[in-house]
Length: 218
Image (cartoon, rainbow, N blue to C red; front, side, top):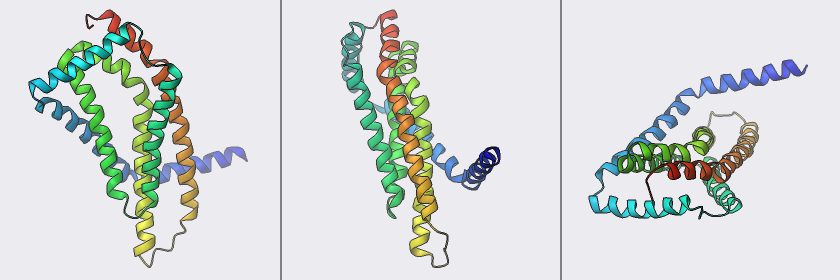
């Protein structure tokens, strides 16, 4: 009985993904466009702007190499709150009829931030910058980015359902079953974000310190 129930759920999830594959593909492409745009912005910056940013970056990495970083618990809470607010905002916008474009803008901006950060490190420090990006940004974002993309896709889908419910008279599909799944998706997203925040707070600083310590950056 349990096996049949599991197979039924797996089938429904796979059919759901197939049905809305175009939307998930769109949000993935949108996020990647944000990453590319963020990298382009780095190249368009003036020399003095890059120098100013690099100075503050060097100061920060100097503190990291000396072990002068924030408390791990504080880092965990800051990361968890920041990412939970982002996911929560996307979730709430999915419920509203007018939130659809804002969801897409937020996802694009999130991709742009990632692209700018990695692009700036690589452009200023070469392979050392790539190693720092891999140590400080990659570990937690291996979890965060898929969660952001999935939640953005689900929010877009739910928002489209809300629009159909409001403006298409022939649309009679009940919204509550989807709303329950939408709530479960938010809970699951927060759990995964908590895991990513733990990696960012307890693992990434150690990785970053080892990379900074092995480089000539002070």
